[in-house]
Length: 296
View 1 (tube, rainbow, N blue to C red):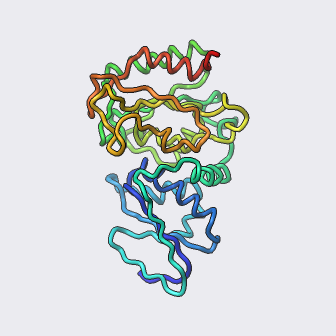
View 2 (view 1 turned 180 degrees about the vertical axis):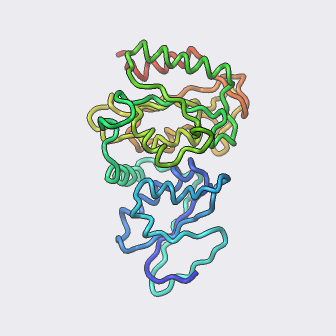
View 3 (view 1 turned 120 degrees about the vertical axis):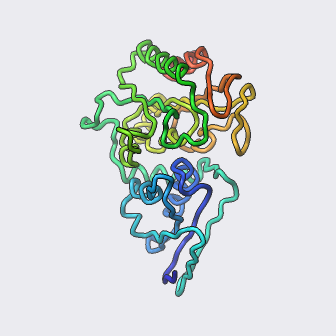
């Protein structure tokens, strides 16, 4: 493929995986948009996922449809020859890419510029907002295991409902696995779902990467107003290890530059890479801390 003009090219790990596209790709592209001239075009990787979906186009289009006009999409092993211009290639030095604060600031600006304040929108589906429990049982992105055992998951959801009542939470509890009526939920639907959420709870996985769609505009009013995340992650007691850096690696490492109130629970010792458990007592403590505040 031959093109003319100025281009910047970037790719990172698992470009057709929804979660990795969000935390390894999207923040870098947001940063690049903030530093290159508006006439510079982008060369980005494209291949359909296992469902035949053009995930990259859907994600970038959900953030900013006008950005798609600046992108030249290429597939694996496709060669691009840039003529009469400059080509800058960005190569990540670590996978996954730990964005920290450097890339998250441009991403937050890009998101808030293109999307309204959804939590305070009177036309949203639930007037009090929602709390999301992410289940990996039959999930659209559950190929890497870490599925909470079925009976145990019912206990977890019941404990969440009890904690909501205990703390006077008026939100609707929504159980999310990436599907609706047997079909994968669209990126736009996931965006609006998580944008109306005050909290998300569940095991580490691509479904929780949707926290990127939280409404961060309201987070600036106070720390208490920040959207909350309670994530189940691997610890030394379980047989589960993160494939990159071992135990304790959660989204708080990848998204720590965003105004989210992070909480973690470690998997219990009987957890395996395929089937997981947590301590319900730890869940109760974490929920009380998340919704009741820390005692001085």
